[in-house]
Amino acid sequence: MDDFKIQYEKLRSIKAYKDLQAEIINYFFDKTISDLCNGTRLNGHSEVPYIKKRLKGSGGYRVYYLLVIKSDCIYLMFLHPKNGPSGASNIDDDFKAALYKKVLVCIKKQDYYYLRLNDDKKSFVFEHKSESISNAKPIQFKEIIIKS
Image (tube, rainbow, N blue to C red; front, side):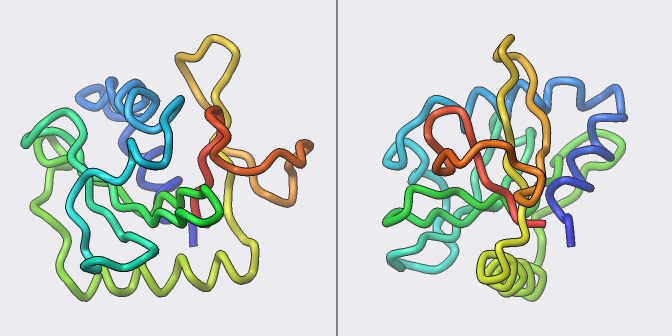
């Protein structure tokens, strides 16, 4: 499943969410793993934090991701806006658990996308792992892995 990619593309087509791409770039790119540890941990003090992060404050967006610290990887799992035409309250615990299970399967199968920052540093593209022309390690300042 492509939960993050599908939701992102859906939201980007809505004028009210024109800032979504910039918010993702500003938060996730050119950061260290320790920079990305802040947010609400959904799995306590696990060595592999499952995080819910607010982008653009309390009325902005929620992004759910898994942070695999020992391999410097971020797996973006889902996002949703809090306001606007597609605004929603937080996702329920069952959905959070289902996302977590899905991402673990995708990691094991190596079925995910890279998020590549374009040269202009104002946009990014999704590239499936099987299509990747680079052998670069994920999340090396210009890449983010997301599950498919």
